[in-house]
Amino acid sequence: MELKEKQPSAQRQRLELYRQRFSKWFHHSTQVAWLGDFLYQVGFWSEYTLVRLVRGVRHGALALASKTARLARKAGLGALHLLNHVRHEIAAPLVYLWNGARSVNQKMEQARKEGGSPAKVLARAMRRGASRFGILSRGAMSYLLPLAAAGVFCFTVHTVLNYNYILAVEVNGQNVGYVANETVFDTAREDVQQRIDSVGAEEGKTWQVEPTFTLAIQGDVLDENQMVDAILQASSQDIQKGTALYVDGDLVAVTTDGDAVRQTLDDIKAPYEDESDPNHRVEFTKDVELVDGIYFTDSFTDADAVCQRITGLEQAQVDYTVQSGDTPWTIAAANGLTLSELYALNPQMSASSYNMYIGDTLVLGQERPFLEVKTIDRITYQVAIPFETNETTSEDYSYGTTKTVQEGVDGVKEITADVTTVGGIETNRDIIEETVLQEPVTKEVVKGTRLPNGSIAPSSGGSGTLMWPVPGYSQVSRWMYSGHKGSDICAPYGTPIYAADSGVVIAAGWNAAGRGYGYSIIINHGGMTTLYAHCSSVVVSSGQYVKQGELIGLVGSTGQSSGNHCHFEIRVGGTLVSARNYFPGF
Image (cartoon, rainbow, N blue to C red; front, side):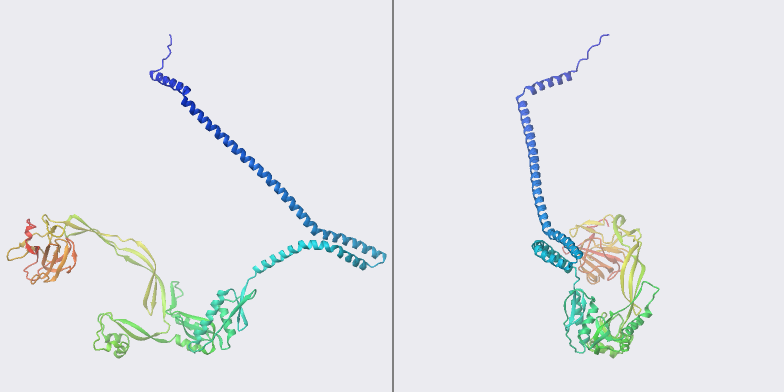
């Protein structure tokens, strides 16, 4: 069987033809030749320039390294020469001294063996050595003295900088102690003057103390209070140690027996203490402080008198707010006063024109302990978190009806608070922490908006529509005619009446619309007014803005009325218009 060679396809033949044409053009085109020459030149000069740059950098680096090495060698040789010269200048006298000492020692041994005097040999050697050694010593000292001076300087600076400098305080030229710095000194000086002023003001005493300070290196450092006592002790003979009692920042007394006063203060608080309860604290209602220090001798008070005062009573002003049902007699009796005493404390009450009103403040004078005790208890308790109500509207329900689709549930939170009590009465509650244990559930209420057919009519005022004021009740016993100004809408007592359109209430209340209307309301809608009469009550007031469909009153039979209904009038531009014109289907 003879095999035949497979012929190429027409497409491959065309591609081969295009390739041959492109190859012929590429090899014979002047443009291609020019482009190739250009690219060659670019490549050549780029490579040549880069090579020259690398060679230049390498040559420069080698030259710099060589120069640096030569300089280093010269500097090293110079330094070695200098060090060698210095070593020779310093070491030469030492070498001569050592050799001379060996020679003198040998001559002294020889003189001792021959029966001569070693001391004379040593004296002669020292005289010769001094004359020979002087020049070498001066050369060595020219190097050693600057080094020694630099060493002494560094040692001095280091030692001085490491000194712990303090201040030596003096009073009348006498050193009374040491403090760490100027801040402690200034504070102590201010405290001294304050203590002098506090104990001497009532007695008219004047006393000037001017402490000064100088730098010191060592000494026992005193704190602020210790320095105050030291200054006072060194400045006067009319002072002594004691304990001052301060109440609310005021000096009450100074005594020598501070321990007795402290014990009395503890005894006052003891009945209120409860060591078994870590959340129970006992404090004074006033800021009480005992300060040990130096005070004027004449200002001291016997400790018993001080204790008697702090355990006694004081006259205090108490304000009282007049409550409903109060009379001067009941107020006086409730507070242990006579009527005359109450009037004396409140002179305005004696005036003939005086009238006592709820909320007035009266002054009641009564005694109370000089130091009252307050207890502070940290307690934890739970309170309810009121739920919120969310109202939505729906046409699934008739207008005026409401539907609760989800009942609200109060949440619960835990509160930690510090409760302050004085005399069994809570005076303050400081909330420390609140933790929500259960979130409240919102009450969901849907209000119906579906109105009966015909309850909305086009209008020339307000929003452009008019709503039937009593939705769900379309029976009208009387429409407007010559003897009747409005339309009587029949509805049970208490049925809600809604604003027919948005507007401003211009009259509301008893006979607000005129005599015989009873409880009535008039709303201005801008070019149109509506009137609602014979209500059992009204829930809006004159000047109030209401929206269409907002509750304004309840059906009743007040005024000239023979039964429960809503008398409804419409005026356009001041002219009465029958409601039947707007609501013909009713």
